[in-house]
Length: 353
Ligand code: SAH
Image (cartoon, rainbow, N blue to C red):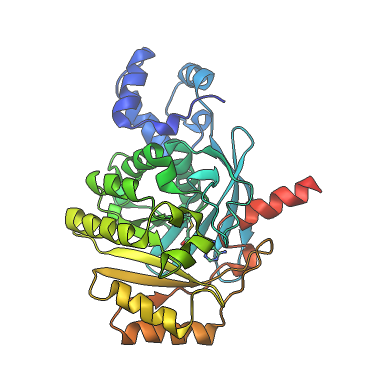
């Protein structure tokens, strides 16, 4: 595999351009083209010779859309192909205020959560910062006619969530590099406040992230109110307790002043009875946090059941009555395999048969 040019920030591009004997201002043209989602070969402001020189070392376009699936509710699901043939997936959700894109940070995942399709084949490899970024660059370019805002701030993708395949904090350095690239005013310039990073709770990395000074929305996948239940669905719970996670969240709040979020997937018979609602209230009451409830998107390889919508609203009501700030996520994109890893898993299966 050749290198990924989208891994480089503006200063690194300047150094590269100068080392190749080009004028410094070419770095700006290069970054402009890449930010517009163009392949190297498609950047018209650069000379053919310079582009050929770049292509000796770098991938022309490190991420390509292999297939797009359109949900009836407007959600788009993409199967992306990387230069080495690996597949990842992403989702674009359309809201009135803009488009939210869900990106993957790894090919596969090694966290082993019982309800999640991403982890079915284990971890294949980490994505580079530029591969994570490129998912957004090409989707943003695809929808450029829907861009909002003015001038440099004009873009279709206004919000980013790191909730696709992979555990972002298990690919820490590239994820943080990506966060700096995507929020940089030299590039897409998406505000860190519009970026959410979801983790299964790798505690030491949560502390490190708090110290990076990137004011993003930190989300922890909780899914249980006690360590024993949590370990049944999330093996990572054997390494880090809920108490340790809450302490790290508190540290994040103190460092950044940002409230934090919890994802709580409702799994029938496992974590969504009245007693669980009560326990969740006890655990989180008074904390500067918000709970996002998600109804399980059933994965056919996994024997776990989703909760009915009415019951899910009753669970939400109990949390609210207990004083928690909480919402039940609308289920969208279900008809296009919206949950993590479902699309890649089904694609890999079809092609094995
Ligand atoms: N590894 C990170 C981010 C990827 S998962 C994490 O664990 O947070 C993003 C969110 O989707 C997590 O809250 C995860 O628990 C949830 N999720 C995964 N598979 C799901 C499914 N089948 N149904 C509902 N939510 C799911």
